[in-house]
Length: 286
Image (cartoon, rainbow, N blue to C red; front, side, top):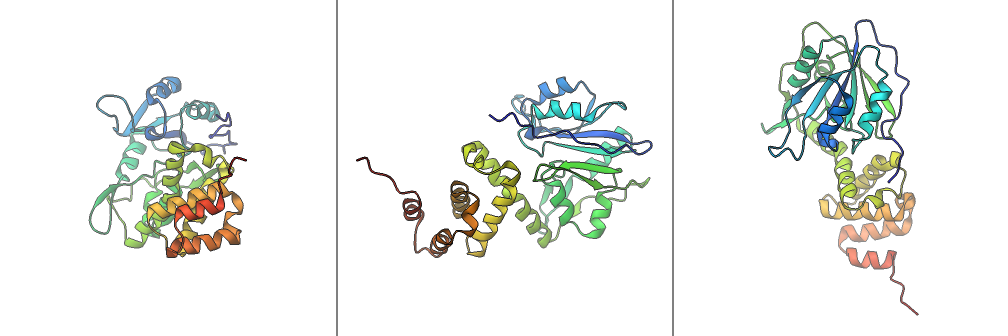
């Protein structure tokens, strides 16, 4: 296993007057959340309780305030030892008290699809946060960001990025979020590469290691878009095409032979077994 850190140190900007720095931790993306909380040795509050009744898993989301003189990078090391994904942690700088910030974040959890079906806004997942903000209309975005001064997250290129916030005295958000069809589609499109990344990390992590980690998201999204342009929208064929792309490497997108294979695969002219046999022929023993 690689010893390279996910949550690398950052040159944090100086806090604004009266600001505090908070960690927002997604337990669903961490191993042994109980041990992590013991290592942090900080008082924590829950956005919601996601613990299984038998205690085997903890998908709760935790908010904790760092001490005023704390070195934030030191706490990143603790989280890094438990995190399974770069979305496990974000940092919020805000003048709000812990209880007030917690309340504002909790009020931003509830959302509704165009068909009236409720769902949970997963902004606490650092992978989802920028796409959630991008999918909002201007009025929704202005209301959502009314929680502080800055919100830090790791981009899909594993670089620390800050989102500017604002903090009016009264929270302007009136829950729930009401998403239109195009917003829902935008969220699904931007989040789907992470679904595939999670799949490969569980089933065959070596495949992902064939390309640089900072390229995982962009590579998979590009391949999914190419498959879609050829008419392949079903998850089975998309998964197969992404698997081939990881085996073939970065040149997959521009390889004319692969382009021809994918056109035939999309049309049904060639099936997966034929393409696999052609691309990776089995060598017979002499």
